[in-house]
Amino acid sequence: MIGILSSVQSITEVIPEVIAGSAAPLIFLILALIVIWNCKFRSSPPGPSFCMGIGPIVSYIHFLWKGIGKACNYYNDKYGEFVRVWIMGEETLIISRPSAAYNVLKHAGYCSRFGNEFGLQCVGMRENGIIFNNNPDSVKQIRPIFMKALTGSRLQNVTAVSVASTKAYLERLDQVTDNGQVNVLKLARLIVLDINNKLFLRVPLDENEILGKIQNYFDSWQTLLLKPHLFFKFSWLYKKHEENAQELRMSMKNLIMKKRQSIAESEKLEEDTDFATDLIFAQDHGDLTSENVCQCLLEMMIAAPDTMSVSLYFIFMLIAQHPDVQEGLIEEIKTVSGDNEVENSDLPQMKLMESCINEAMRYMPVVDIIMRRAMEDNVIDGHYIKKGTNVILNIKRMNRNEFFPKPNEFSLQNFETAVPNRYFQPFGSGPRACVGKHIAMVMMKVITATLLKKYKLHTLDGRTVDDIKNINNLSQHPEEPQSRLEMIFIARRKANP
Ligand code: HEM
View 1 (cartoon, rainbow, N blue to C red):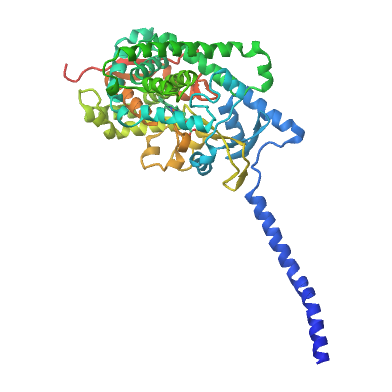
View 2 (cartoon, rainbow, N blue to C red; view 1 turned 90 degrees about the vertical axis):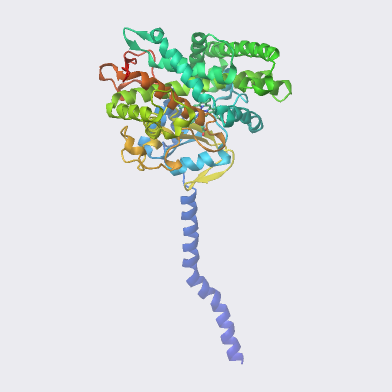
């Protein structure tokens, strides 16, 4: 017994050693796997090295020097689809991988944007308006007012208004034509501003004056957005930009006053409200401040001219560059609407037009980057993302992904089969998606069809969108002034005069 016990004792004494001996490598292996898995799971994305703080300075200078869009392209080309850089000393991810970008867009934890607070304050966007408003409660209150104006029954008359505005400006084409060359960007801006006014405000305005102020406002917004804090210590550096913003805000305040007068004189107001009326009512109910109302109207008035006119410019150029596409579109327009003006019921049948607009937005996106900020810790595509990290989605590069048969060419083949959402996001997605996406598609279809019914489009001296000098900063748009941005419109002869 003693012998057995002593042998048992010796076994129990031995067991831990045996276990320790045989399990040690196993435990070590498991730990190693956990560490490796954890490292992979939380791996830091590639990018320039920190190098005692030199990396953050160099990458920030790159953004300030080249502009946001160009800097993003540079870093994605150099380090891949998921890159870490620094802007204003803050960790910033640049993502052009469709799956990762789609996850960010859809995730409620990324519904904030980023930019220098002083810069946003200067242009009136800090916790105000919608586009760069980072106050979730304020956005929750304001976004539905935009949604109401841009979706549902309010979309009903967009087609008729767009036809009327396009025709009116085509009849006055000489105002934007010099030596037979049409300033297409100016034409598109005039048409789009007029449509916006007729839909959202309905107060007489001086289009040229407002357009000039909108362009100055956009330039200032783009200039101030990522400037360092130090820049705002010297008022003479940012004074001009503050004034640009102030001038557009003053114009908006005047228009709101006029709108108030017309509301006071209106008899059947309840049946006939618009975006500006909704804002004014919200102010009168104490839901919005007068500053909110002014900034919301300003942003509604700039959102379309800043995006739609440039998109239309790229669309017209690409159509002119591809005569087969232009002929196909004309055939479709004739088949769908004959000699009549385009109507709501025609729009779903304009399949080729839709592919052409989508392909132009894929190939030359006006909004080529989307800026967001992580509001909570998260993991995207295996990368750990800390709360507060800035995220830039490089839409232009993402649009040229392997899903498309000809990613680097303008080709309607790219939209011959249905494109899943995650591969093509011209309007963003999720809780901060473009509120104007439906109206934008309707306006672009109608304006393009109305123009093509009347004119055949040509570029100047065989110029293409690829040889236009573009600014890729907050958005992608042609540098102005620049020679040969104009186009030639040749009137079409009626089939049965
Ligand atoms: C936001 C694209 C036209 C109003 C955005 C965003 C994109 C975009 C990419 C950011 C979305 C995101 O963060 O997920 C475009 C393009 C347009 C266009 C390509 C035309 C070709 C319009 C129009 C309006 C409009 C016509 C209004 C009349 C807005 C507003 C926001 C926005 C208010 C900010 C939404 C928010 O932050 O909650 N747009 N847009 N857009 N867009 Fe558009």
